[in-house]
Image 1 (cartoon, helix red, strand yellow):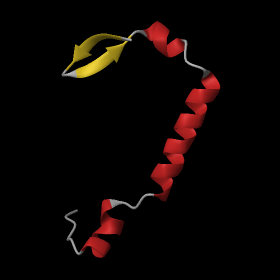
Image 2: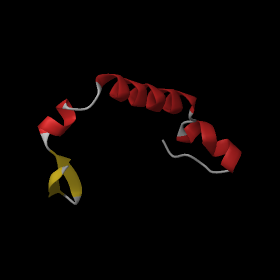
Image 3: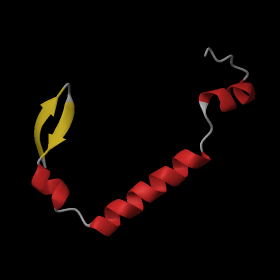
Image 4: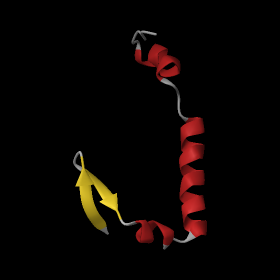
Length: 55
């Protein structure tokens, strides 16, 4: 449940976060980390897209 907004981003009650199922949170975080690990970096993807990357 959104309790307020900060810079147009929702802020949630601490109790709502603590009430989440730990196994569900672990699974979601694990999926996100796997997706991130499989993703290319901008520098790695730039040649495929024929873009230059400024470092």
